[in-house]
Length: 428
View 1 (cartoon, helix red, strand yellow):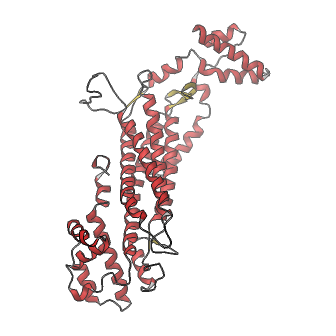
View 2 (cartoon, rainbow, N blue to C red; view 1 turned 45 degrees about the vertical axis):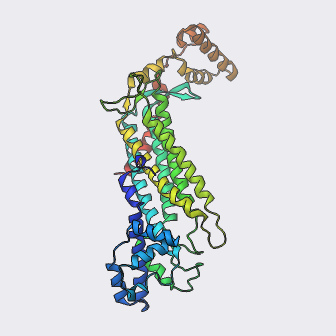
View 3 (cartoon, one colour; view 1 turned 90 degrees about the vertical axis):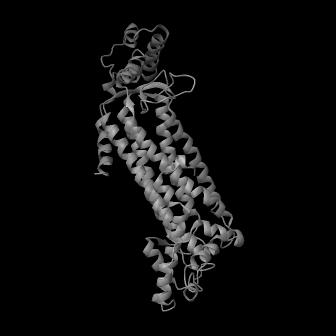
């Protein structure tokens, strides 16, 4: 992923140097386990521990000749190990014992970073929702004024969506954080299963229960689908904010510096660029998830078709998802809310947003539904046509009502607030 959408912690995690450091760790753990079995000499393990992590440039140099990254890595690693000890490196293992076990460890850590960003986003959404719990705003369905709600209620819905994403991410993290040290087709023919147990336990990984030569790729697809779903939830937040920032609405505004410039040609522009960026990144995440699904079906015990795809989609998806979640949290934290304009837009329709309460009132009086609906609709149409206030239009057709206020629609609002308070308690 380009540096523009990659935060430092995630960039370091997926760097070539960190990958080779993790590979070295797996090799040493596997040799330790075989030392305990009396197979690998203790001095060989000590030599492995003293050896330097291969430099990416050296591995790349060897790979030009060998066309095999793992063998090039092993050759570079063994250059710093006495020959008598180097012969014990990678004993009984196949390439993907190393690659997939290290990958499971890295993806687990990457998922942890992403979950941390998502938890921050949830926390910010909850706090802003509670802060604007009583800030009335018109609810819109099909883009058209519907009934009053509150801005806090809007944000609460997004907070619960992020919370559900965290549940999905936790399950996907558990699914992908596994390893296998089982040999060429997963039969443990040349290596004791206790080696696998030691390596995976040391790295905090689960074990692939019926390994082939690779860890099953449905695990990786599950992770990227969870990342993409979180991305879609962030996109929903960002899309809402884009709509609320339109010139004719302007109920919210993104945080901006004093040096902000929205257009090279039009100095007046105040564009929702952060929200737009978040929406665009969600499209990338959906694409990565689709590619991960394509990687699930491999030939027999393995093929290599997935490898080139994963080199791109795994670091990119985790990096983009992490960046997107952190950027969304910053956006919500600094969001400017214009409560006065929100209230003004409720009043802009001359009382039409209260039509459902009038209908409910007539039904409660025993008026037949069709008659009640048509009466209220006639008054609404009169307001639309003439600009006469809805209350006056109702009076003109013989309907009187006394509760054309937003509070009529917030009678049971505290039920939702109590649920939100429980969500906030998760971060206490």
